[in-house]
Length: 433
Image (cartoon, rainbow, N blue to C red; front, side, top):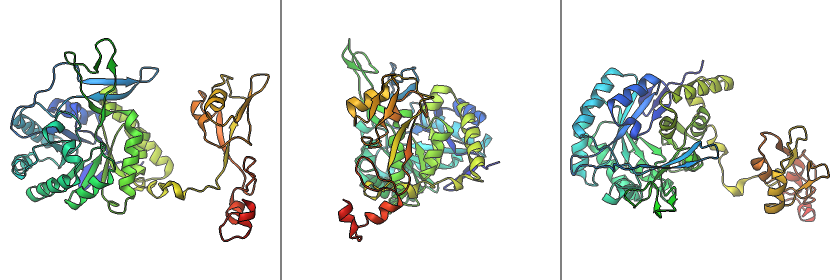
């Protein structure tokens, strides 16, 4: 049976599934319940310094985006960091770590951007027994307006500076949590590495407004007739998170920098995708808030079964395996040609593929008199829009053309033969064009 235990920057946990810093990790009772359910680690909800008290709103804190079946696709939250006293949190962290020594426990931190504030809070958390700290440079709302969170994460110089302070004043492993609200996520990752960070975690939440009340004309969630932008998370952000993780994993200046993957992890498959793109573990929030802590059991059993089928004995066999296959557009093989193929046996004759292709694509599907549908190979550009709109799984598939065959649309050869004919050093190439 595959061993799911991980050793992430020296922090050991029985599996790669950690709860992200968020409402589910705000207090001792939640964290104990999470460990009992099987979570390998927890990032305690972000702690702040003992300055002006943090006061959260007492009205709605979440906006939502649902699918057609009301499945929760995304959450927008306007909640701030913990509003519980620092001493209470530190006491509970110490007690939990004492009782669960085999589980990872990381403390998320956010304090004003001066060395004294960081030095003070680090000295106070050293004796909790926690395994490491995560620097919250990502929160896009509330704290950012106070010069913390994404206000720091959007300035690489600040990231490097604060990370150096943390490494100077603490013995604990340091994870830097990155904001996605930036043009190029590689720049803050480079800064974190220069500052001495042991790892990065990403993504934090995305600036968003999930909806507008069309009676009150205010953003949702609405507090006394007003609304504000919040942080977006959940399954809908996964594609953005995967891309950013992959960019850091393959970037020459950040290759080898350990990554904790965050963003829409709901199933074991999501976790495996993050890990294949370079994440050493994953952090989860929205899935736990939607389905409860025991959702981790499905993640554990699913990942274990997948690794057994692939012959992987440990998570290190999976981490980063897809990174070499992530490339830039100009390096894609333009001689690789596929065509759509419709299974008559599976087709329910809804016509969605036909309408989508006819109205918005390449008019490559024809409707026959018996209302069956056929792909016109000479028009098909293999965009696979039809595959994505078809309501029947595997009814439409993309079939690769045999090597040496001519593409009916362009008249050009495809496959290995094309690699020779179209090679720029081949005098026949110009004639073939």
